[in-house]
Image 1 (cartoon, rainbow, N blue to C red):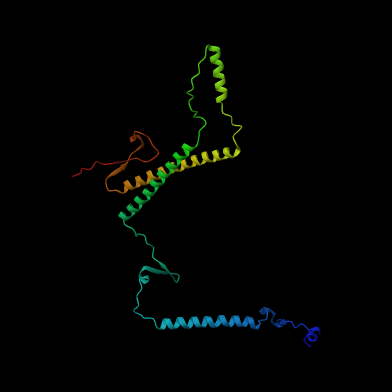
Image 2: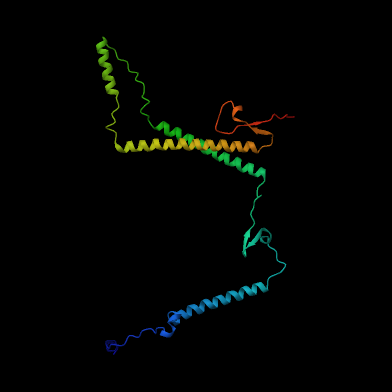
Length: 228
């Protein structure tokens, strides 16, 4: 019977559409849409009820440090700006730690530069030939000299391209590390100067005609102070 029931063609029922007079309100809401909307509405009601209950049971004498350390901007609580968070001594200590880190980075870069320079073989610095040749006359000496020069000439045609690329990248890395070390040394010198300028004592910036060895960096002179 079930097979005969399925064999009979039945009309496919379509969902009811929005009437023409109500098309301005959009699609017709189905039951599943109503269930989702009702569930969200009841959740919002429960949340508002819980907040009202908490507000009614709140202790008016309750204190929180955020009440003092924050302010409201357009109804939003924001912490107050901490302009004077550190004292002058603490700032000096922080700068001193930064200088120590930069000095450590400079030493590390110099070690890496030395290691790279020792591994790379510069073609311009040829090893001195200490082999001694003996000749009977001038003609034989000239012949030996020409033979030695031709044998000592480097042959670049047999070097693989992989080794050439690796050597070129190593030289590029060496130049980059040298440039980085120079920048770090300049930064360390600037930070050391700022640290000295923070110290107490009378000082003044020298003019260009007062500097014996001209330099791009500013030069300061401290007044002599008697030490007890």
